[in-house]
Length: 177
Image (cartoon, rainbow, N blue to C red; front, side):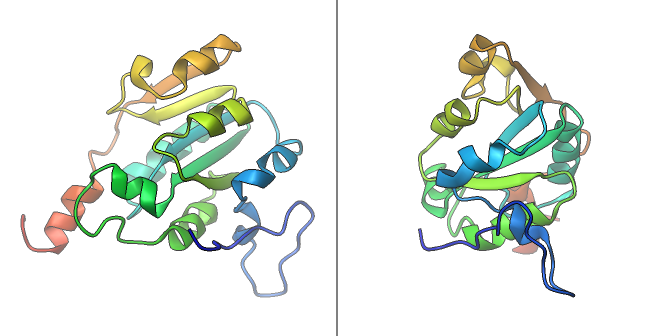
């Protein structure tokens, strides 16, 4: 996968003029340690977040409002390609997608996964709330049974703004108006 930028951990202070958001990027293997210092309840969501749009940021802000901290897990580039979202996807490499997600105010930590689903991360991080966007029925959300099994909740957040990266790319490519 290469080496995406890695946060500098708790207590990191960015040099004057440097952005602080890279500290929110956490390799999967470092999550256990980083989560010890994160406020609970912990909300978990995941996705590709290829070209971040209004629908994404609205859903992430709503997800964050369900807890004290929000962990976002991104599909690696290979994992995203296996989803079948279209040729040339993801448009943005993981390194860039991690940086954009980390820069969002609602996001506490951002990590990634290589597998087809984030189930192993969900089990390892034991979130209190598992969230996906409104195109997911709660019972179909990967990890729903596990989260409910340890007393957590699962939410499908209805779309406030109907947006789609696929539709946006079609517009950019001149295929629709």
